[in-house]
Image: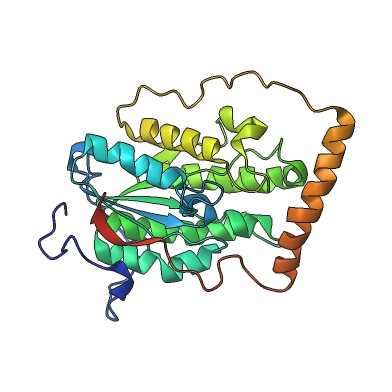
Length: 292
């Protein structure tokens, strides 16, 4: 699959559509077998699919464009695999079914050696989000990616115990995570375990909205993803944070929480009630599979 002669380096993924006569999904075929997982030395192309986490919300560059863990990880991977081609199809606010409808066909058509697949978090956060049903849809996509020969990186959700009101959803996140670990084992995927990361329990790992990682948080996740895949790195994603210069008093913490709810939580809930998404009308930031 690497260096596929039919896939030009200047290929625009946005111009690809799924073939109308595509075969049945691999997981629906009895006795389906999957290609061997490409080793790191066989990874020449990488496609990231997902939502705001993978798009890089919370990690703006000097020009305002988003960076994020996937871009940071791709740079590390390119250092180990010179000439790596990389595309990022993730768009903020996307639900799992939207990622499967809009991004998965493009990733499959591009036939990359490596795909990072983090999706379902927005669904889990919504009332009525069923982690069992979501996992079934997620597994179908993983089966399709593996059948196409891709190595797949599966990301668990974060432990929400220190994330304000999101701690109320901790049980749903844990249930979804357990499904993801089983799926990863079944299809020989690499697991990037965000639930087990201690470093992201520090508030400095999160941006002001407390829903997205900060630049430092994205950097920690990029380091963790690299280590999980076996990319050589001397950086420790779980390195201790430096001591904070000042601690918030209980009164200041309450005021900060009220301000956060007014500026971030209420608008987020409002968009959900109106059926709107922060990603409505947005296109992927890096739709082309090109060298870094």
